[in-house]
Image 1 (cartoon, rainbow over the protein chains, first blue to last red):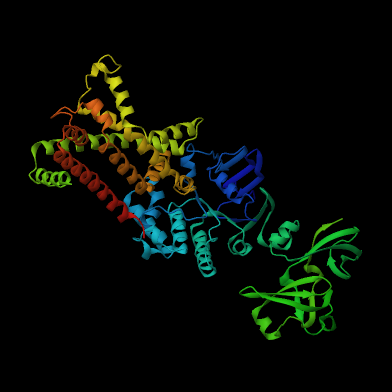
Image 2 (cartoon, rainbow over the protein chains, first blue to last red; image 1 turned 90 degrees about the vertical axis):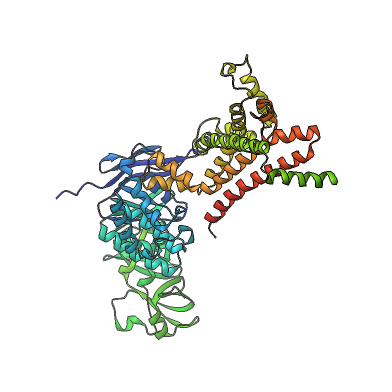
Length: 365
Length: 232
């Protein structure tokens, strides 16, 4: 079976500003009904990439194709651009009612009045802002304004929707609620989406695929689990939420296992260990288990067990991060329930353990 | 002091009794200045929008010329319009010098840079990404420009006020291209100059009060609209 042609396809795209390339994307594709999260720190070119895809920014080179047709910046491809809508980070609402704001894109397309009415009301309802229909857009809260902005984009029923940091200005509860509604709308409408975010939680929640960007380039693309569990380099690892990144030297190898000396400890990892020399490894905080008794006494499959001392406990809302001193600093992520049952306090002595398969090798040699 | 008090009393009498001549002068003032404001809006808003949104070499030079033009001395405008309309001048054959039309023309030249300058500022004060967001929602060029102007409508009211205020109160150009001909081109400002020159201070004060009231009521009306729409 051949894979269907992508909806949006990019090849050798570059954007230059002030003589320097700020965006360099050799290839990128978005398929029908797919949600891709572009993650990366601020100022890394995510918004620029979206602007270029939306045909709002002149490119220095390369090609953007939407349904097989080239997207060019400016008003030349308005008809094509109408099937692809971009939503900016700030709501940028017009100085009129919520209803009129949502109707704007439909009026651009000269739709009949009854259809405009029907589509606007349906979008307002799906985003739970129908009661604000007649309110002035200037009197909305941040969350309401963001919802209006999204309704305005969805009302024109685009095939692709480009969302630039849709949750950035919202407080956590509003963020969670909007994220749920957005996910449902994307699923129901089958709209393909690219969402930029610097928060990997948003990315994990919404995306079928994650592309990690750094300095105008995509450094890794893949399913959330590929990117989270197999980051290609330290940058992706840090960004994907791995805090336990260690560099050491390969001490011994054989039988599909090898060990890396980190500080004065040895961490065992799976993989062919024929190479010798330096290695950079990482462990997801979620994969670190904590116990008061030595787990090696009861279960033998755990390769890495370290006696350690709790140095700090930080609440992250639904879970907590425990910082451990075991010759090196190890971070474990545990549920609040476990935290309470173990009554963890700084200074307590316990055992941290993780499997050899949980150790991910970023670089060797 | 008596002169002042007497002047004010006579002035009120003239106003209340709806003196035919004062009325005619007032109506002509309004007609000319309103027409000139309309013309300057029709030329100044599109020009301002273009200058605010376009990008061409020399754009900054043009914008600074417009800004300079916002303070154009009316007598200089009067002089140039007179020269252009003079019998032997390039447009002499139109024979419109010393007519209300010439005054409308001169006042439009005075108001146009004011309207253009304020329009440029209003459009440029809109959020930087607004134009792109409008485009991103599928707008054509015309739809984009129209929506931007609509978004800038409140600051644009200031352009109307400043334009009208500038021309209703100017005297230099009106007297030069209009000639202050009784019953034809005599307006509030030129009549005030003439009456005070003749020593008829009561009439001059009456005309000044009317001028002030006129300027005030037009601006008051526009301010009410502007403030009513302004979000709190």
